Image (tube, rainbow, N blue to C red; front, side, top):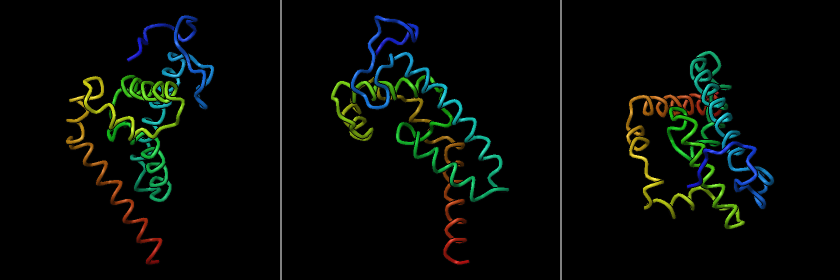
Length: 153
């Protein structure tokens, strides 16, 4: 894991030189960008869930888009603190930088599953939380309703 205690403007910090998305950025700058983006998407996700009954179709599309974006990194991304999730993503992007290959996160996760840095017992417990199950049930219900409207209307 990379030390992220330095400021985003630090010249001594490693940065991205190859990466197609983060080329020219420092690790701290990428982390800050991810933290802000995750926090923003978490707020949007919560607001979407609150208004899901009124705007089912739009809500479903928004939820699915956010789940596709952050779900591969952690199924409970909406409940996590943005910092640790951003750290996990930065580590992954640094591995892509090191390999100079845009490997999928699933491949990275499998290769690092045995390390203690990757295993997060708190995150594993969250998968069993009532909130996580409720969100999954809500998303599935919205999918069924949307499918019914698309195919049986």
